Length: 468
Image 1 (tube, rainbow, N blue to C red):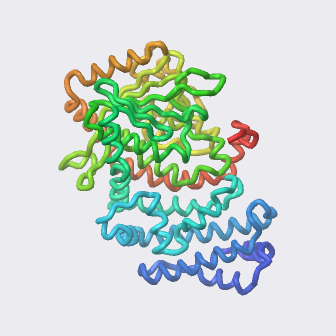
Image 2 (cartoon, helix red, strand yellow):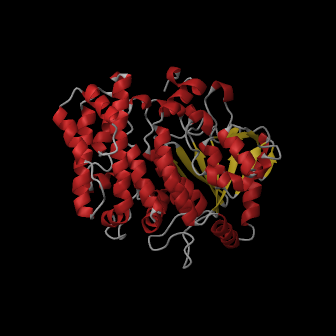
Image 3 (cartoon, rainbow, N blue to C red):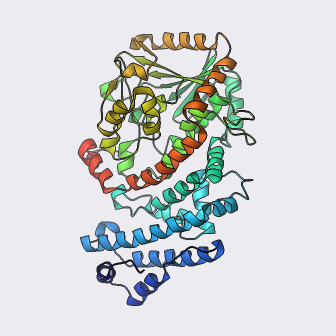
């Protein structure tokens, strides 16, 4: 550890109370340069094992003194620098091994743990993540940051990244049986999501009423399954997204599109890092690009995936992640009293792909104001109308949706889908999306475990005093 200062090592010795021999073994185990994959897997793996051993000699995060916290940060940063070096040298070979030379598709939820099995220490195991599951967000050491470093490297590698995007666009395994149920009954309840046919359209209704239709770990699987079913449903030509009426006294009886990420769950550590990647590469991307076929990626020059036009009804508000979703819709109808916000500054996280997509709608300046300075966009304003296609009275939303569905399908859906694809190929090619998500994977991991996130949630959300 040639570039480690004597002061840092001295700090580590004072803080751990551990064996001098353990610290010296750790210092000497850090690989200098990457070589071949097999050798590096062994050498780097031993360094990461010893890093965990040194960390284990420190108290748990909530009990650390300021000096012990600095020592832990020092060890974590050295281990992560080694992971970045390893991935820079070997991510293509590693991904090829995990996927049987790209013959097997693996979702991010499976991929990160498969990597932990092949290269111990590169990413945390399921057992290690499970240890942190019941901790408050502020009490976690951020093991899952290493998942972000791994996914950033995969997405940044052209061949591996395209293959991972393809895997995440495939329909989920639980879809076929539920499509049959929808065909038989015309309606399907999937926990916090409801699907219902109405004329030529399939309506997807978000039903997390207790939390103002917020998204969290309890909604993400159901949401993606619902998007798959709506997209694949042969009995509907178009898909509609809405929120249900909510229970909150302030909005009782009002329909709300959604309030973004569940900030109470975030503060309490109930939203894992993988939630962000599963969401962005999964159902949000499927809204935008459709569902892939195993032998063909959407927007491939040789063919296409399966997709529908999506219409969204914005009632009351679309906050955070729900505003992000609007940027993937083909037509947005908003109530005259509705508004949109992307409160990323107050949350301390990156608002999905909004940094890439929002400037296409409102321009760079307004996009930066919305994301970095919390600017609210009322739907019935010149700026709001850059995102919303039509403004109606809240009481007229049902009729407006029916009218728009009829208008979009009156000439058949084929031409509309072709135009949708043509816009997309020129605006956001898959490799642009892949490159953005490589940066997002890394930076969101650090944001998710940043002390600033906890500070923001306590200052702006009073998160420590809210009930789950």
